[in-house]
Image (cartoon, rainbow, N blue to C red; front, top):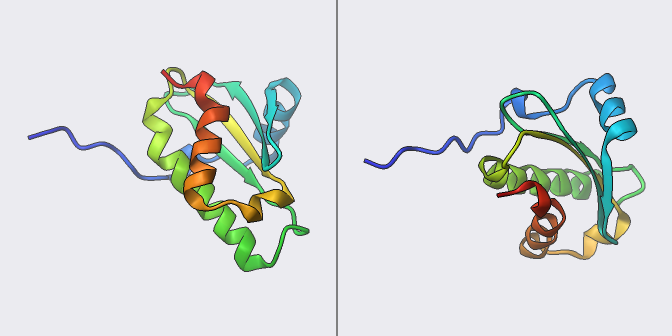
Length: 117
């Protein structure tokens, strides 16, 4: 029987403390598109982690929550593909409201591809 992949998005995969966010902002690499900005910094943990920021200016609460779900789902699918553990911070721009989920996933993979195998 094939080995089952861990496709959860548990608390260990999240950046939660402000000190963790500050560390990635100050030392991490910034990569951006017109839809979002991603800060990345290798970590010493056995797994990659994700932090998400969506400003209140971007649509209604329902739209902001949809963006966060879309980001978490894309990260959850690709978290096993990283060649080394990394901390990522995702910051949404207003233009992201014009993207469909499949377009977003393709764009996100392009930006994060240098950390993948």
